[in-house]
Amino acid sequence: LGGRVTLNRKSGAGDILAMLVGIYGSKELFVNEYRVMLADKLLANLGYDTDKEVHNLELLKLRFGEISMRQCEIMIKDIDDSKRIISNIHSTIRNKNEKSKTKTNPEKRADDEEPVVDAAIVSHIFWPALQKATLNNHP
Image 1 (tube, helix red, strand yellow):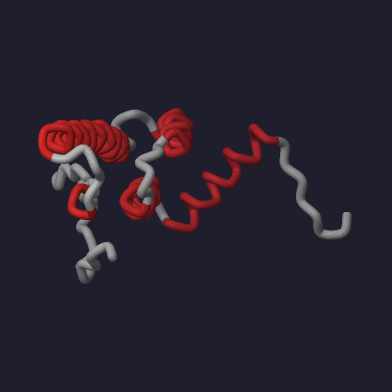
Image 2 (spheres, rainbow, N blue to C red; image 1 turned 30 degrees about the vertical axis):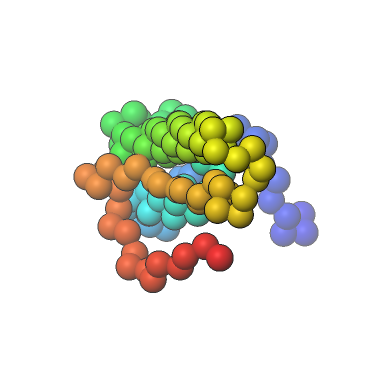
């Protein structure tokens, strides 16, 4: 037997989740820790890509129920909304810069660069407490 454990894909995922819940002590503690890790991952995701997290969340909802994972679902929705809003802001700024450029001087100047604007919607009731961190400005 050599100490190797083989698991088929379906029962293996269930066994791993059961083991993790056992390590954390309860389903609620596991879900809360997942929520904290998901918050960190979502906020570090500069591209606002949530496809993988949505897939994982759907699988966890099957295991733990929709109500247990509701806060995580709202967190992902916040990031999706952030992506849409940032896209609209960038489009508005770009259009404004293009209009002002054509009216005044068609040549591109250094001060016509599109400003860096980023934001994330965080529904504070559903997100875990955010860690205090220093604000670093983009160069």
